Image 1 (spheres, rainbow, N blue to C red):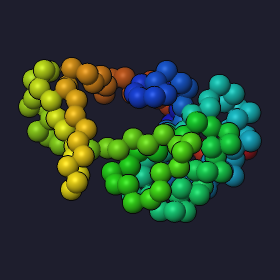
Image 2 (image 1 turned 90 degrees about the vertical axis):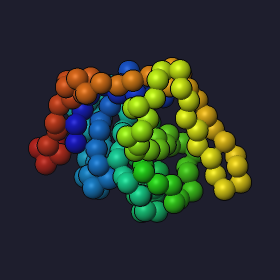
Image 3 (image 1 turned 45 degrees about the horizontal axis):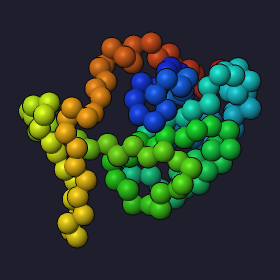
Image 4 (image 1 turned 90 degrees about the horizontal axis):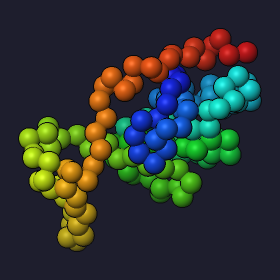
Amino acid sequence: MKIGTEVEGKHKGLPSFFMDESELDAVIEKTDKLLSKYQKVRHLYVTSDNPSNEVIDKLSILEKFFYITLEVKEINFDVPTNIHIVLNVTSTDIWKLKETDSFKFHNKHNDVLSTSLESLYSTLPEEFLNDKTIDLDTIV
């Protein structure tokens, strides 16, 4: 798990824990200790390519203590109302577009969402350099 400042999206600027879904059990077990040691951190950013219902249930426990962001590559679950979802879409083609070009998402019913690149913000790798690793085994 890492600790740092969220640099993207809805919770940009918040002190945050960044973790993989595999660390959820340890975080649930040590929530009180984490909240005591890192008093300013109230945001969890969790990555899970395709979360199970068990992962969603664990996040529901933690949402009593933290704002939750869940980054996924697929949504095969009912989206909880109190969890912020980041859908990670991978495309090398988007980097070939000009700032004024647009992209869109559509479904089989032709519902469309679109935006131009100039409406987005960019995050650079160096913005993550200040994140620090936390060994959950040392939290007692």
